[in-house]
Image (cartoon, rainbow, N blue to C red; front, side, top):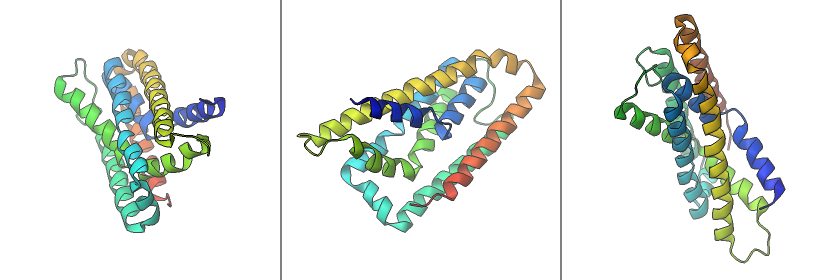
Length: 203
């Protein structure tokens, strides 16, 4: 495993994006356990893109404008829905003292869908991972799976760290209704901006 791959992976994963915003929101609204669940869900959302890259479906997204646009706008729609849920007092990111099993399932489902509906992830795996596989590599598939495993582990650990840091200041946030209101607005704005960025994304 090259140092270049590890550094590039850390930079990509730690950069603010949909998964980071969602994990922070989960930590602030529902606590440490929810933030780890959110990180796990975002990591699981990577698996279909890895499978797509390995089976050639990512190439279809890259070459088919219609397929790419369909997945892209489904993702945009979901991000806007998450923005709406952030603004609602009783939405998906509502503040809960003791989240129940249903809310835990909701955190996981939302996290998976946020990554699943981002077509750029599939293309990313096709474009990114092969750069770190030598032309003389005897088992390309196993090498790609190993690199993907490291990428997913980094995603889970870094997202969890973000979420747990957010959860650590949760009590201060919950105690102020004004801060709570601005927190919802901030996350809603972040989801809207991420949706706009995805909408403007080209293949």
